Structures are given as structure tokens and as C-alpha cells.
Image (cartoon, rainbow, N blue to C red):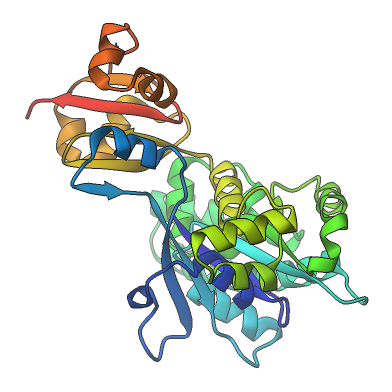
Length: 351
């Protein structure tokens, strides 16, 4: 999963980026001279270590997500949004940081201002491509170009009406075509309200008000205390836990962010286990066993025979796969079985 972090100047997006990625190794930052900073972090999942304890594997592999923090110092307006479009082209979703600190704040206004700039940048891309497609159709009628022209006109109409493209109902083929343009308003958005520590008592109300104001949109909203959580992320695990406890936070910022991101993107996790490796895999909700097998290796999907399935809770309670099998907790499922979050899968295949 690839997340682009965006926000108005002085919203604290780089502080939020550091709070979420402090555990990333220095070698994972972007190369010198880049206009963005990219870091890869492990997705926290409390189920992974207990599975590792059961198998004592040679390798434990969590799921990962990458965060991109664009460096756009001094850029404003249309040029700012155009640069974002270039840097965020490959992002699966956008984390839109909105600063909520100080007395003179307008979270919704700041959010709308940047989104309006994004709509205009997307519109410029769509109109440029539409002009080219229309010109090519004037020379030769082609069915694929006619379909693209119709799609682009639908996008143009929505953008001119100030509707983000993520609200439109595209077919999978249309989505695939649009991904090539990297249009920012087509990407899912997670709003991160970046709060001062002093605003902790108001956090739930602020998030609720923001959600209510965007009731017609499909954005998710979370709160995060960028400055203090970035400092907390520099501490060792026990000190961070105590600090988090003092703040009255049940989870770290990364935990909250990950849960909201998976919900926003419709993702879930399954596991594979052995003495060689215990690993977390990420798939869309509703993916079937054969598709999950393909995420592990294309040969597994091609030669799929069956999946042996046990929910994580049943395996942990049983204490071993053998005991789970004896207790009748292990199921045999076919290729169309919809994989559930937390399933532990063993794929049987032959190629």
C-alpha cells in the first residue's frame, strides 16, 4: 500500500509523516535530490507475534506500507497542485493533513481549498487528453478512442461541477485507464486532523463535526497529535507505551492510521505459517481463495487445488495446527471461498 501525504503549507504534514514513519530504517528514505521523502514501515498487527511464537520460524514478515511526503517549499496555488499530481501519481490513497492548532483555524476551509486546487489540476489533465483524443478521432474512428472520449467527458463534467472523481461509479476497465493519468481526485482520501495536545478533550467532537460536514463524501477522518506523537515515536517501546498511557491514547498514531486506511481501501489481512516463515498478506475484502493464492505466487493460483483454512483465533486457542485439526477447526475450502480477515491459509496446488 502506497500512501501520499498532502496538506496546505504549515499544516504539519511532515511532522505527521515523521510520527507515522519513525520506525522506518534510514536506508528506506528516498535518494538525495528527490522532491519527496519516501519511507516504508511495517503494518502493526497484534496477531503476527503470537503466530510466530507458535512456529518459531526462521523469518517473520509483516505487511508493509510506504509513505511519501512531497517537498514543495514555496509553491502555492495551481503550481502546487500540479506538482502534487506528479509526485502522487502512484499513490493508492492520499492522507490529507489538516492542521488544527492555534486559535485562528478553519479545518474545513483549508481542506476545501486544497481539494479545489486538486480538482483544477485534474481538470487540466483531462482537458489536455480530451483535446488530443478528439483530434485523433477526427483523423480515424477507433472504438477504443471513442470509449476514452466518453469517459473523459464524464470526468470533465464532474470536475467542472466540483465533484471529485472518487465519487463516480467507474467500471474496472475505466478505472484501469484512469490510473494511467494519476488523477488525484480519483484517489481515496483519509483526512488526518493534526491536533495540539491541548485539544485532546475536543478531539472526538472535532472529528465528528468534520465527518458531518463531509457527509456527502467518502473520506475517512482520524485525529492525530503530530508533534507529540512524533516525539513519542522516538522512544523505546516501553517508554512509548507509558507516554501513550499518560496521554489517554489506546493506540499509536500508526495503529489508528493503519486501521482507518484498511477500512477506507477495503483491505484485510490473511496469514501463512510454517517453520520457514510466518507472514502477513494484504488483499481486498471479498477476495476469494484463488485470488489470495495468486498474491502469494502466480503458480499457486494457476495450479490451485484447495485451501486449508483456520481462523487466527481458533489456531491461537488450539495452540498448534495439529491440535486445531484434531478439534475439527481446520476447514477445506475451494477456489471461490471468500477469505476472511485473520484467516490462516495453507494453499495446496499443482503445476
